[in-house]
Amino acid sequence: MVIDQSKMQSLSDRMAEVKGRSPWADARRRFLRNKAAMLGLSILVLVTLFAIFGGLAAQWSNEELDFSVMGQVAQMGQPSLENGHFFGTDNLGRDLYARVVQGTQVSLMVGIVGAGIAVVVGTLYGATAGYVGGRTDQLMMRTVDILMSIPYMFVLILLLVMFGRSMSMLFLGIGLISWLDMSRIVRGQTLSLKNREFIEAARATGVSSFRIIIRHIVPNLLGVVAVYATLLVPLMILTESFISFLGLGVQEPLTSWGALISEGAGTMNYGTLWQLLFPLFFFVITLFGFFFVGDGLRDALDPKER
Amino acid sequence: MFAFVLRRLAVAIPTLLLLIVFSFTLMHLAPGGPFTGERALPPQVLANLEARYGLNDPLWLQIWNYLVGIVVHFDFGPSFVYPDRTVNQLIAAGFPVTLTYGALSFAAAVIFGVSLGVVAAIRHNSWTDYLAVGVSIGAQVLPNFVMAPLLVLVFTLWYGLLPGGGWSFNDPSFWIMPVIALATSYMASIARITRSSMLEVLGSNHIRTARAKGMPERRVILRHALKPAMLPVISYLGPVFVSMITGSVVIDIYFSTGGIGKAFVDSALNRDYAVMMGVTILVGALTILFNLLVDVLYAWIDPKIRY
Image (cartoon, one colour):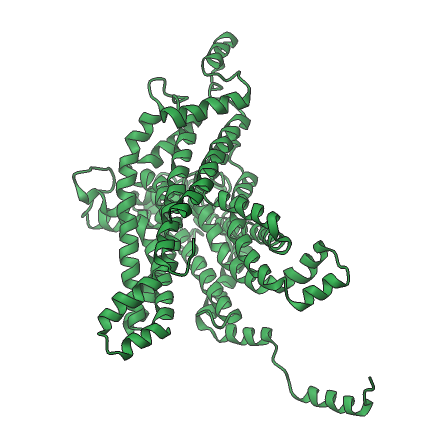
């Protein structure tokens, strides 16, 4: 086959003039135009900054007891700029601002790590099941079905009680259940990918199954995975808060939104409403943020799903 | 249809057995037994107790005995902490309460969620639609453990309208707050699912045909649009049901309703493994049964499913 060099050259020159729009650029444009998603993203950025740098502004550490307000928290422990308790104090006289910063760190971390486990395990599991197919697929997906019909919140509490309440047990318990949905979604996507030509080409050139899954299947799943990962983070935060609300999650001196909400809810009879409202505010806006960004990503990456 | 149900049962029963074996093994692996308390028992007493409860038998025999007890006699064994109570009694005390407010919340979530979603879809892009979407987005971030304190704050502490806790089968004012607390976030999700699926159905060909032949709008929606639009909602009912039961843990603690969640949390704090396992297995059985019902309902409504 003879290719006319000059013709090719002129073609490629023309190509440079017409700027192509890749699907990713399209998606980014749609996402940036989505007002709710941008609002969500800015909320998340602010909350993250608060978690990282909020501690610098704190006048008190999270473990210090302010003896001047002790015993009269309802009168003296109110939010004020003068004594340095920006969000007031909790019932023991600890600075609520420092506690909320710490709770935000813990809750965000649990959410992100939980979703991270789900993404890694679920993607690999689902991609393997979908790509290998046949009896392996049947067996793997039956297992997922069985695990899904287990009342996981009860099992999680069972685990926490039997093996002690610790962060690592909490991560393990949340990680055990969070990947199930992800693996189903990924498997479905893999099934539609695996008979495409580029996979066939890879197989024809003798690439191993493992490498095909890692190098060719998984990168093509990233869009879907990103959307569901964004929606998983708030679910993980909800799960952790639920557990911590019951007093079975993170333990003192660590705290999280769920634990703080629980404390605030327990003391609101005494007129110390700020103890409930500050953690609740951060909890609610962060969930909003994640839901908005997740929906925005889905609309941006999958324009027909509306 | 019959074969379909049988096939589903063939999966459901091993699942349940697996759950029982799994939780029993977990209990066996857990550090510390039911008799390791603050005060160490004399070794002879401990040995007697262990012999009495069969704790010296090999694991498979213990599991087998436990299984036989549940399957044949529907007996979850004695409590490990309260000498005079069995797991069955503890469950029987709490279960009717949980079932009552759980079923009410389930009904409330489905009825209000579906209505909100349908109305929003019919009046697409009107202020009704925006209001419905706003409500459902707002309610989505209010899970039961957030709703419970907020409701108590407003209705009990500020206005004194409703009792802040307790339970009575005869007085519905005790039911209102648990039901709202449980139902709100699921109502929101159901409304969102209904709205988007209804919008899709309303744009489809058979609806256009029905309208073209002059069918009244009300009839178009009730007869032709609602049924196919319900399919995604139905597949979401399984998780909703599970969450109603799980949520009872929070409701029972917060409102002191004395349901099954209370039995579970109490036993968790007392390390009363027998009760924890009994509740877990019972809830698992209910979950599996309910998922089966949902699948059957789905297959019955969706003409495209061949079973």
